[in-house]
Length: 126
Image (cartoon, rainbow, N blue to C red; front, side, top):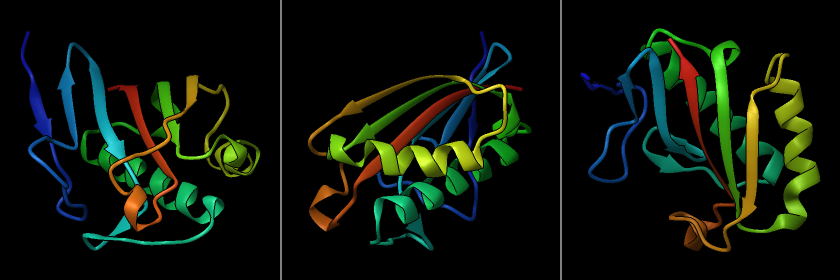
């Protein structure tokens, strides 16, 4: 089975990984966060959720997919009390039918020390 790395020139990786990998008709996206122009963008959970989903949409676009083709989403929150506010933006930005989803309170994520509240990874069909 082949693996094709996917990376958007509009986004940057914060480590030794690809933004996504295409394999077997699926696109596996690495976790995205509220980052723009290579820098973390602080804000409310709603603002960070919106930018994070926009970043995922960009990675999916480069891979030849879209939010409409999502099949699984994993959301990591630093504070589970942000769940309802995150869900407001999530429901607004993702089309029906909604993908399968897991949301966990991770405590810390890589950008926690800068105020990061959310990271989202996903799997989409090509």
